[in-house]
Every structure is written in structure tokens, then in C-alpha cells.
Image (cartoon, rainbow, N blue to C red; front, side, top):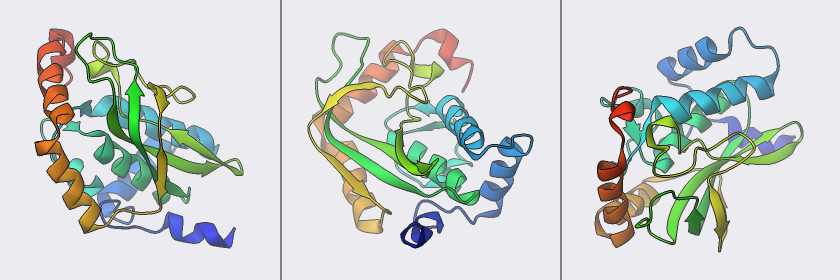
Length: 199
């Protein structure tokens, strides 16, 4: 479809043409034939390779260099979308303005802003959320391919790409929103010793 062509192009924070991202997409999908299975493999790799944490947004390219390997939801989506685009799968951003995550701890904020991905696969749009993995499973229910880690949301916005202004606003929100500060504290308190071995 012609209107999907722009959704496979690299963009700010989603550098799908970067040599390291191209190499990673190939190494994660080389032995897999079906595109959906390749994308699923990207999903589970991003979900579990990077611990969810409230840290600055750096984009797909720089995320691969980050140590320790941790990322906020938006950067996990940046990398997942970049891997998808690298193999020609259209991908865009989904923002849940007020989302009720499937939290497992009593003091987790009731409503938070959250980012996920929407990919065009098998001739339809599919929302996937690679944010919550094994490293924070004591805090929020693990995201699965067909089962996101939220119960509900009040408003969804879909964006084809991010720009510097959106990154700036999102980064500021990480430091001033009480819910972001509270989640950062929760992640520190509830991360299990077993999850630390993955860092």
C-alpha cells in the first residue's frame, strides 16, 4: 500500500537504517521465514533484553549502546519499531494518555501515560507493547505478543513518527510528573535480586 511507504523509513529516534540496527534485525530474524514470526522475535528480544526503567529517552541507535540495558517504554518502542522497519514492516507509535497498567504492587500509580507500538502485519494494524518483561515481572504483568499489560486507557493517539519537540516534552515529563517519580522509586524498591542478574 502506497500510504504505508513512509512508515518503513527511518526517522528521528527510530534509526532503522543504522548499520547496527540492520545487523541486529538480520541476526534476530535470519533463521525465520515468516515476517510475523520475525517481528515476534524482535518483540520478545526487546521486551527482555532491556529492563523497563524511568530513564532518559535516547532513541533506538543509542539504546543499543546503553549500559546497563534499561529503557523507558518509549525507547523500547523506538528500538522495536526500528527493527520492524529494517525488514520492511510498517510501524508507528501509540500513546495511551491515561492508562491503567496491570500492576502487581499496591502503591503503583492508578493512571499513567504509556507508549506502545502499532505495526502493519498480515494486512492489518496490530498494537503490541514490548515494555514489561522478565526483569520487572514483580511490578507489572509481563507483556505478551497478543496481550498488552494494561487493563484500560482513556485516550489513544497514533503518531507516524516522533520529532525533537515530542522527545523534549516527554523527557521533561520524566522529571516533573509525580507518577514518573513514583514509578522510578517503585522499580528500585520492587526489582528482585533475580532480575538484577540480567543487567
